[in-house]
View 1 (cartoon, one colour):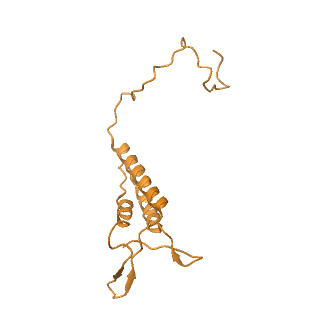
View 2: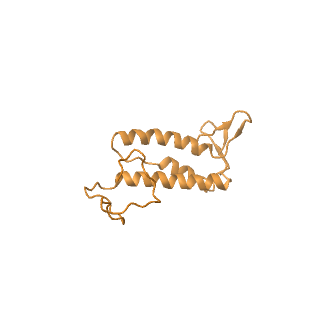
View 3: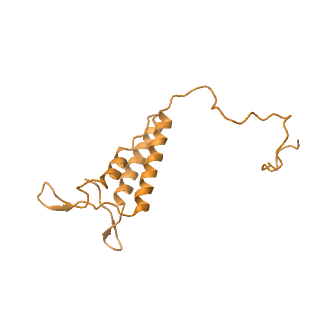
Length: 133
């Protein structure tokens, strides 16, 4: 099941702690995957976020030893829920970008290439260390 973390000062579960634990483990594995030129996977993070919407969230379970164990309640804070969804989306986009085929063509831009005969935009930031035009 999911790891349960608690605020040591209060002795109560911290909302979203399961996500923090899943992220910690997933980022460690994903950093290793990137170093090994593999695409990182975020399944544990995805499962944690999906678990918040499941019916068993917030109930109790019986362990193999017969003890009753509280299953962490779903996260109710909308900021935490929305932030977790956005973070998961960004992590998955990162993995998709690493999985994209490499091309030798430069990315297409809508801006024309800058040449020395084009006028300089006076409203544009200027590098003070650049040679004068």
